[in-house]
Length: 454
Image 1 (cartoon, one colour):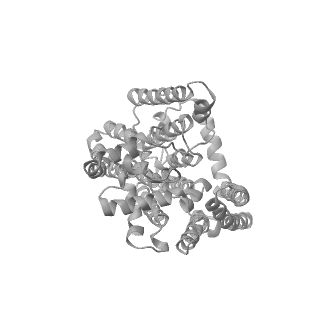
Image 2 (cartoon, helix red, strand yellow; image 1 turned 90 degrees about the horizontal axis):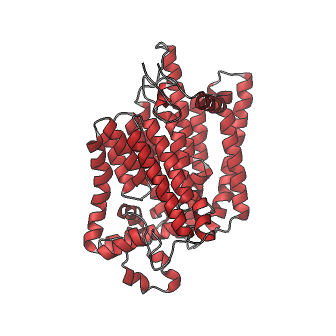
Image 3 (cartoon, one colour; image 1 turned 120 degrees about the vertical axis):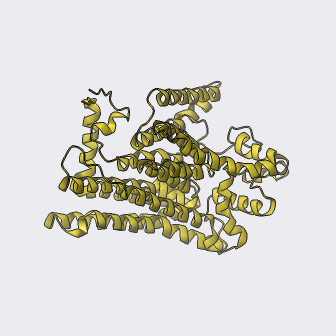
């Protein structure tokens, strides 16, 4: 018998009620309407010109999606079983929203930039494309400390490439041909779309949860619930403004996030080797994927598949680092270690008013205090993993989401945009339930309540 925390059950019940209201359309309406307001405010008030340009286009796209959902709600009142209000129609609206709020402004800014506009890309785009050029010419995407020091003071920050070597691959098209479709954001979008499509396919091939009910109608209902949860997860990774804005103006975080979601989808499908490869690819792009890789390896150990996960999760990032290490070890160390830790020739401009940043700037020895809190949070997560390792993909996603949320909140130098990682991971979790999980058993491993079995 399984005993759960009733408070946690009530919390899940309230969220499920909200998520299912009007067949999911009520929350769709809220998502698109709030996003439209956010985009409009961004277009008027942002101090970053690429963000203002994004908001001007995205506000119209979100408004169109909002009006479409309003029409669906009105139709649902007249004809509750209409196919125009069902799950396939909601998927279509999500695709339309992503096209108009992300892909359209991305293409527009890329074309304008190719035509000579210098205010149509964030600095990340330029950094990645310069890394691609250096990789092609010198065999490493990094400048050494002497080369960075030789740059004019105002250009030294742009000399750094604070990513893993694999990120330079997205800059190679621009190094080979200077046109709008070689903009690194275009290839970030291609990588993101491909990874998400593979994740959706992997989860849809996984039989849905049937719980304690009988087969037949119960299986169909479980499949619908899984697909609805999957749609919500895709929305969080695509049309949520923090993701749409990031991909259209900068973009480097989205393929990393999408590969992490793909890794969790493979974990839910009991494909540990593929899960390791997916998160390993993400780790070869950016350090943000490394905590996810660690938790997935622990999940693999509960399946006696830790080695299969680790081969890809650890092997691919190491394989990406080796060429850069052999070509110029000092350049790799300066960009990948010293700069992110605040010991480079210049400091990172990443400043958002999260607790870690406020502590670091407002208190004596604040950076040490913030670093201590960050280490304490890491130790707490490590203890959790050791005492209760995640045995399901759902638990793995939740630990990754809450862990990254704590890290982002406590890091002395961070960005508001990094919140896209925990938001998407936590929203992705409900789509990862496996066959045979009951509503209570599924959360037994998630730490939301104590369980006993008899």
